Length: 209
Ligand SMILES: C[S@@+](CC[C@H](N)C(=O)[O-])C[C@H]1O[C@@H](n2cnc3c(N)ncnc32)[C@H](O)[C@@H]1O
Image (tube, rainbow, N blue to C red):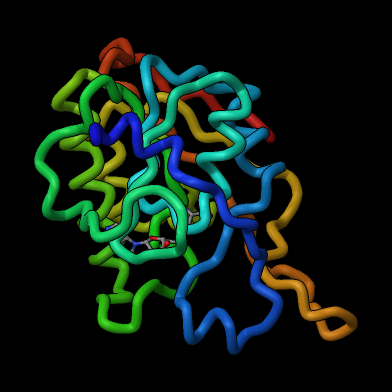
């Protein structure tokens, strides 16, 4: 089965985390639909989209719902897409894909327990996905904490890359629902968008979602 065909694998109901414990044991958090909708109001993917850290398909479903073909893979098995695909072991995009969209594993406080949670891990992820998107002169959209952009090494990396837009989310993302114990979200997030067809020297657009 081709990766494009994986998109049609059965979809199990998606769960937004409902407790800190669930997050700790699964080390996974789903992106609320409005976050991906905000991206797609400003960003038009070229060709099929690869969601390489798809989790339970939160982003994939919204992107597919807007008529795009989506290849969904993940290192872990959440019953959605193709499991067992470590993005760092991939050197090429799935056939037909020219665009990567994901909420990377290092955006909040980390991902799988056995993985590095350091800022360096996030930079490595961005570098690697930039290489993959670059291999097809494609696009890359990553959900990050807004403040991440201003870090020295992140700023250097982004300045050297075909950074085309930042879509700052006006509303804070509530990652976890814990009923009356739900805490107010502390961080602002943004989509950072890279496009290998972005005109060199043209400044990135600042947009709001
Ligand atoms: C923050 S969750 C986001 C899930 C999904 N993208 C969403 O927005 O709902 C990060 C995901 O990255 C996956 N992941 C972590 N390391 C990975 C790797 N090396 N290759 C592929 N997926 C990875 C995790 O299993 C998890 O599903």
